[in-house]
Length: 337
Image (cartoon, rainbow, N blue to C red; front, side):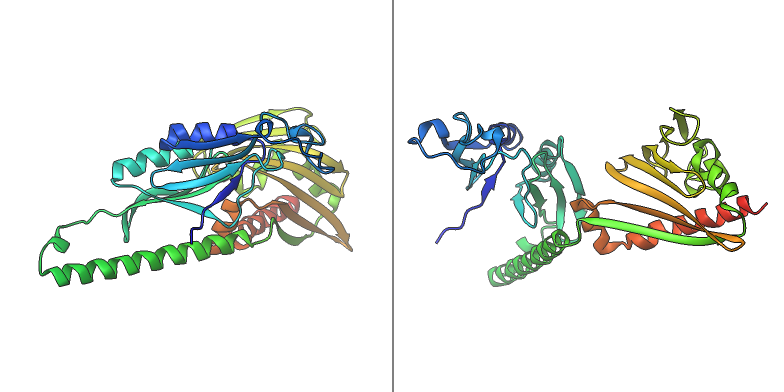
């Protein structure tokens, strides 16, 4: 019995094969295009990027690519242009630390690093990434820190090697379980905090609706004293923009007010570029409560795989929520003056 991976690149198969040739020295041992196949009846739900009712003749129907001692199968699939490989990773074992670094850097180009390549307690090089096509890769190499396995009796060395293999396999199994579990987590997230402020909504609203005044209350404004700020668009309200670039804590990104209902609601497009790219929405709602105003600060958006993975080890709601609580407390102080 032989089990092989079959990767569907959704219209980008040629690009992927060329990438793996360059990055890993992969060899295409078989390639069949739709033009090589007998004429087939059109499929009613085929994607237009595959040629409308039928796949385009130059698209890859089937390919076999050899990477080292392993053969993978691939095709253009349904040509949606958005390949997805959730809950699965390809493990690549190097023969030296230098080779692991070379492969890791090559595969990471245009992709996303989930775990930087580094020494661990079970390997001298270990890292995880998602390449530019969305394929997950796990790279590793174990180099003995000493020559202990070379000493002692043959049975002792065999026993040590056997135990080492069992340990490594167990670790890989645990990692695989974590990665698969991460893929099952929700595709979206929402963080929300509220506070009651003893001030009318008309007084609180300008502090949020004008990016120039965020320095009076936003906790993120204090993360980097040397942060570079760029204001643009309208002075306040819809169309107002604010871009920032700071240290590792502050990161970099851009905000734009997309909706502004006086003394009631403000919706902001929030795009991060560092430490990693995300596109979210932030919303502030103000609700009068007799002599007070209840202010709710929320953020929501898609949860990419890296965020799902991080969420297993870090409580994102608590981390972000703590900042929201600090910001609302500062907003309360500024509004109640």
